Length: 184
Image (cartoon, rainbow, N blue to C red):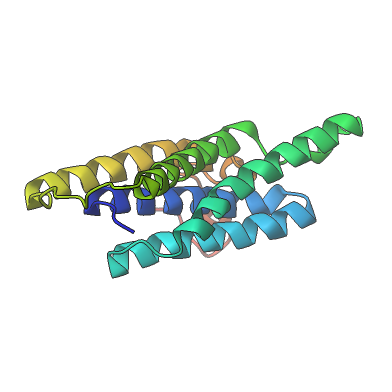
């Protein structure tokens, strides 16, 4: 599959970002959806790492399906909770983390679909684009890392695990107030 090095890097970063969010959402999810999100999250992270390590697109059709699967699961859970009149079923899958993961997944699905479409055009000549310079590549990877980090951080903070995490400068749950621990 012919994609540029920059596009492959962006896909890998988006996959890792979505995977990390899915793993964080597993904690408060209903059991069946939690297990599915766990598998999808691990798969997304593994796919992103494999792309970065091998520098080639791996199982793109499976990745395209994997990008859409969490969206379908989320929609199915919300519709089922609405029809059953039990919004508490879908409540653990908070909107912000799932929406940001959906942005990553839509990006992955769109890029892969555009690539498949371009390759399917009859008589299309092979790409003659020159490889990106090192500076251009590093700038693109830096931009992808900053963007994915900027989107993933608030998503992780909005998960159940993120809302119960200690703030910086906390007292570790009073552990420092225990006898014999001394005050500094």
